[in-house]
Length: 348
Image 1: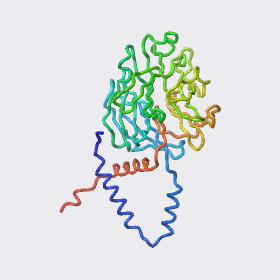
Image 2: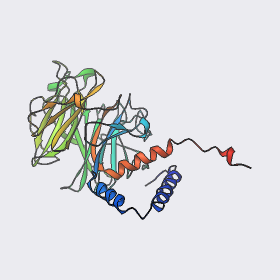
Image 3: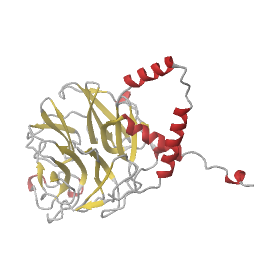
Image 4: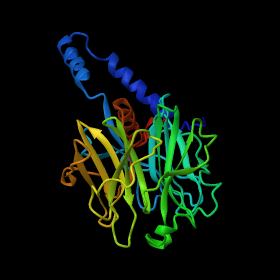
């Protein structure tokens, strides 16, 4: 795995500072030590990480984090953590991340409005990344116009990664031709891979009988639930619906359930926090995020007023990560934001 080492020196400095601080602590204060131990033992062991893009996706990956799944804080001062380098248009839209069994995080993203590839890179800490690659997921399917909003999960049962996205393939599904803008007529396609070198031939993953984009998966109540956006514009729908199935690889119920969101939203991200299921989505016409909350994935409560998302955030993924990962990202930001030393004052 190719890695960049630009942050190695600052991290070495951070380790030295932490070691010096530990060595200077007085051993004569056991009560304080006991309190610190108790606090550490009761502190949350995980947090939430939000991967998203801004604008048209030209500047790359942005990150935010949350303690509770409602209030979000930008990481890196709002700067991009990874710049796009591959694909037909060199964009990094719709970044989706999944953690593999070896602790490596794999990210896929939309590289262009039109094309047959999606982007891929991997990391352990979101600071050092593998070389980016354009995965030719639809290279073998003639008539493919686009590959939008790829998502990735690790399928424990099959011991591989499942990647799925939306594509329009000209001439397919004529019964819904013209139902979306610009003659798009999407269905969800998928591939699988164990090593990101060999990809299974792409196949139709979900055809609900209408143009559909922005699929995302969650496991709950012994089933897999697929959240999708109905992309029908004539008549206008543009809302989220949920299908279910026994396996991550499908099949899923057709048609899906009734609409669960308002119209004119996209980019769903669903996760569980403190016993509730939270469904985030991009209210793209009004340029803000919305959210729903449910205990059973059947009845939903609008909690948009309770969330706080970085301004300008667009379609991404929300995943649970170890708290030390967030702490390392915060520490790196503090080091890199320090002003440089006044070297002239050190000279004779």
